[in-house]
Amino acid sequence: MKQILTGLILLALSIPSLALGYEIEKNPSLPVENGFIVGPAKIETEIAEGGVKTVLVNVENRTGRSQTFRISFDDFTAGNQDVEAVRIGADEANKSSLKNFLYVEKKEFVLNHGDRLLLPVTITIPAGTPAGTKLGAVLVSSEKMSDRITDDARAYSAANVVGQIATLLFVNVPGEVKVQGKLEGIKTKNNTRVFFLTPISLQILYRNSGEIYLNPYGKIDVKNMFGRQVSSYILDPWFTLPNSLRTREISLSKGLTFGRYSAHALVNRGYENIVDEMEVSFYVVPPMSLLLLIVVVILLVIVSRRTKRI
Image (cartoon, rainbow, N blue to C red; front, top):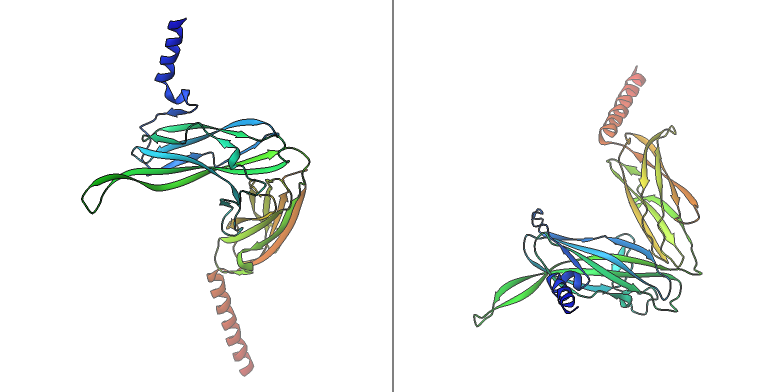
């Protein structure tokens, strides 16, 4: 029995990453990209109040050198709809706060080039937590060690923060909640109606006025002045946070030559299979077409004047 126990202890010591609840995969042949990768970008899950769930975040070092990585937690909220999808950091009094419910066994790692850290993150939803969406972020910051010289010529090692990447956590706590959202608008960027060059930037506005996040999706059909469809664009699901307005931007280029066009949006709200429809029209006048039009107008004016003289 003593020999078995000793063997188990030696095995645990020989695989320290597993003993600490994480794993490091090694692949030194990975190409050097002077950066690191954190994934997945987003994790969606459902946890009942009083429940616990573990999700996996991975960190891959592609800097070409050994690097120190630190793990921290924060909340996030809806960002400026025209600039950023989310804003990291929020008031702790925010009822959607998740950061205090997150846990990892270790928060600092040294990864060699090609190492891939598989890090379990435990999410604990306390009993009595109200139903709705909880939002949190697992932040991974990268630091490199460098030697610096002080005024008295003594060298010391210092850490320089060289980057930070987040995995966003969306946790729905089931229960009686308000689920409400809709397509609020479709427009060209800056409400421009006449375009001389393509591509054309189109904006889809979706408002989530409920208490849980939603993932609307759909498509945009573009038709010319004769009603003929010239192109179609798929709108993959995009997240919209509770009580926020989210803008989705689409670049239109296919099939646009000269004339009046309409862009027709069909957007599924992300619940109960409800589809909203809206449309916007615009004109495309390529520079060569405009030049030809000007030449034609000038020629018509010249011909008209000569005809009057005769």
